[in-house]
Image (cartoon, rainbow, N blue to C red; front, side, top):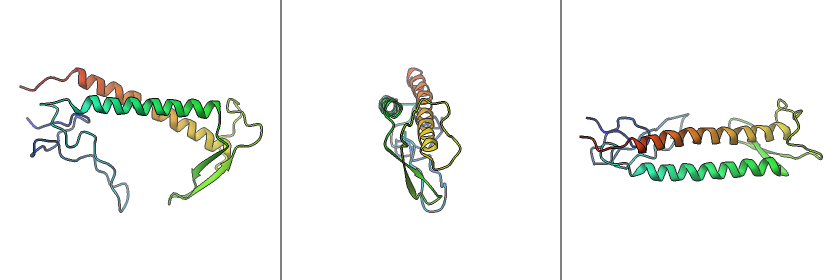
Length: 150
């Protein structure tokens, strides 16, 4: 039976006893994304030691994202940065006087306005939290289902 990564569950070579680096993508020329967290751990068939650490890191990420979201909603920052072009150039917008983060009329479509940058930052944090909640569910199930392969 081919070895599987503890984290992503994919069949990955483990010629040295640990899972090889995997998960690489080339989103463009000149760089690679990071490898899966399960790289360099033993295969899922013989161990589950990467899962508790991955769960711990995901829980910590979730707590930081929830705190950042609550802070941003209760006390919107005086300035926000946003990317203005494909090269990653940043611009800064300043919170306007009388800004109300709970206002249903917050402008969402005028690129570069404080309101749109703020709303996008809120949506990103909410999406990050939803994503890590799904990841935690998957990782916890994988850990609960683990048993030594025969």
